[in-house]
Image (tube, rainbow, N blue to C red; front, side, top):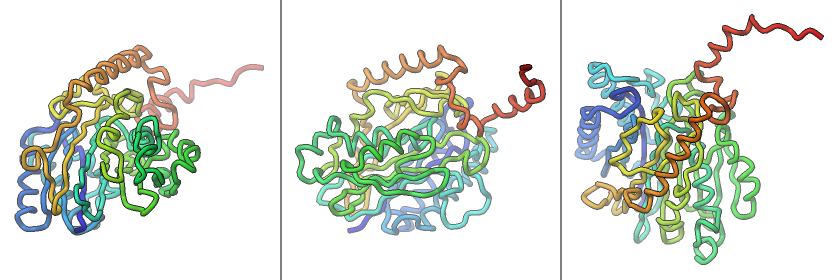
Amino acid sequence: MRTTVSVIKADVGSVAGHHRPHAKMLEYARKKLTEAEESGLIKSFYVYHVGDDIGLVMTHDKGENNSEIHGLAWETFKEITEKVSKPLKLYGAGQDLLSDAFSGNVRGMGPGVAELEFEERKSDPIIVFAADKTEPGAWNLPLYRMFADPFNTAGLVIDPTLHDGFIFEIMDLVEGKTVKLKAPEESYDILGLLGTPGRYAVSRIYRAKDMEPAAAASTDRLSLIAGRYVGKDDPVLIVRCQSGFPAVGEVLAPFAVPHLVAGWMRGSHNGPLMPVSFRKASVVSFFDGPPRVIAMGWQIADGRLVGVDGVEPADLFDDPAWDYSRDLAMKIAVYMRTMGEIMPARLEPAEMEYTTLPKILDKLKERFQAVQK
């Protein structure tokens, strides 16, 4: 049977600055999705949060970009904003909702979206990653390692079902165009693009031999949509695992050494992407971070999420093995902060154009004088 997994997230308000959503916001989301499940619109769901973002994981049989599914998410976020966030004067109430008029699809309207439609296998494990305080390009390095690096993914070498490689669909976030490139044959071209994560980001990955969908990521850049800084994008990612795809351990392995990603405080700094458990996902405090990622593991069965207890997912970073990575991330974070507002701790000028820094520079413009020769 064909099943669609839709992950739609938004920041619509939080407690203590950018810390975490209020419990009533999460309760409201669960209520709305329970009603949708009972009506038959969706087959199963899970509501999560990472940092100040609320995410909706939904399974259904309506395909990708379905207006009813996107409408459900939009309505949920709008109602949370009006009925919970604003009355409680929560910080950034509704900040990711950049339009008042829903037009059938939330893409380009603020919320982040990742969706995969596929024919269910005999056993279909998936991992949903959700990050806070960073941008879509944060997935570039992990996805390359998962699907193109044999030093990370042993299956690329020893598993015949992976040996033909994978096709990367890469989006130009500025021009709104995509290109498909195949690994391993075009690995250098892939890296040439992915090395500029603020401009190019992986949107989808397919298995080369049959174009079976392997992964999908959210790619919306809020600053490019709004024309100003309105919070970081906080991307989501769906990855299928095992039996013709990288194993769960191979998918998680790239996060062992935290790489630097753009975002963090005021969306203006580079910081390490820290793998955290669900329990730790909400404790966003050091310089409003550091950037973090959670990993939710499920099986898909008959169109439904199967977790460790009902739809409760496996918390794949809740393992002492990841303590080393978290310690390393904090060492990197503290080191980066010793540079203050000096690059590369702060983002490059092109990224800063969408922050409040240009207002400061405009004040000084008239005070610059030509150098006397």
